[in-house]
Image (cartoon, rainbow, N blue to C red; front, side, top):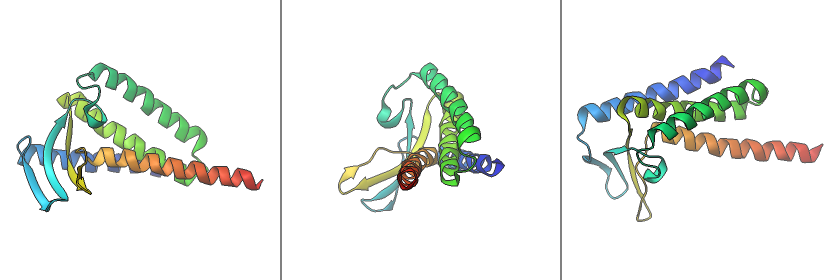
Amino acid sequence: MYLYYLIAIMVIVIDQFTKMLVIKYMEVFEQIPLIENFFSLTSHRNSGAAWGILAGQMGFFYIVTGIVVVGIIFYMEKYAREDKLLAISLSLILGGALGNFIDRLFYKEVVDFLDFIIFGYDFPIFNVADSALFVGVVLIIIATFIDEKKKEKL
């Protein structure tokens, strides 16, 4: 089980390191195009959740993150011991939630910097923690489908 907590710690370390680089070397709103009309590093701050919803509601985010972290740890300890995919999924979500929580705690906003334009749509700017959250949720959906298929065979 400790391996899965190590995954969460790795997500946090990579997330915080990349955000530190953005804070140190880029001005807010500065943009560095890496792949023209597709991918840029853009220094952005978000005081809300995804797409800026609930901006400035730090107390709400502290409470929700605390509940989510406790729930994930409980679920990992109780249900994910025999399901590696579920454990990895929860590890990614735990690391992502804590990565953004650290930003909210110290900066009162989340540092975002990964900026993609996909088929002409300027996707909201995000970070490593957001990526881990997204991948973790997708893997939980896959794990759920696999679990349901196993139950159907019984």
